[in-house]
Length: 330
Image (cartoon, rainbow, N blue to C red; front, side):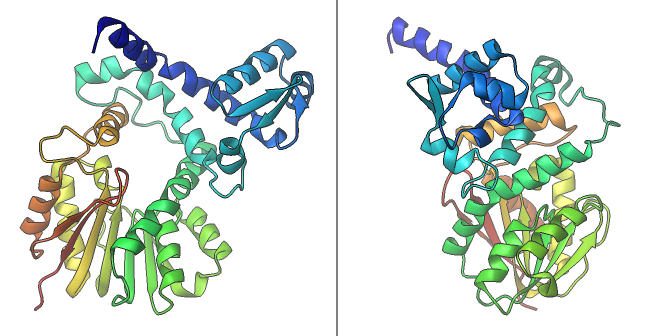
């Protein structure tokens, strides 16, 4: 790589925050909902209460990002925006983008977190109801494709009683139950999350097959009698000791021969990839005291220590990386 190429690469990396800010601002302002039909900058400004100059510059920035097209002075969504940036669209990502926008404060203090080795944010500050909904519904935005990937990779037809730990909006359970009519599920999450999960399950028409359990998975018991436990995107928020304890509790919750599915941004053994997982570890650094992303070997060791049979690693893509382990037959 010559110097000129290296310079362009570094500039592209360090300009990234500008591009994300353009997208976050447009999503938070509601720009994309207006642009299914062509509109002028003045019309957008008036509808959203923006300054005409600011609206014009924001829209032109979206043109640069290929999220909006401009013709004869009028702006309109490109297919990417229509598919993913309009609330209720088939690939709706608006909630997860709002959540990522809410993470800006933590990332702005990365230098402090690196020096401390953990978050410098006020641990006593709670998410607002709006922030909580953005986070939980954002999990649904990203889980839809991952849930389908699990169904394609893992035969769930033998299983009848699912425990979905840290279930969030219940997207995985909903997807599994739709695919397997004989399955029932218990959704376990914090008390403030349960109403959102109930809304999603009700909308899916599955309330008669779902139980909701409010609790803290780090200190509460998980119950027993399950033949399938899903631990999706949970372990990265906890430290190694807490994960070791949690996986042991998953083992206790399973019947003989039951299956544990751990889905997370699992890293290669030498921690050189995938890139998303390496960067996400820093997201845990700035927002948690002990969270991290972990290697496949880490998870295998925790599962073995808990008493699981030797497991296997499945990686449909960089975002859906799975460790599958069965509880030994009695």
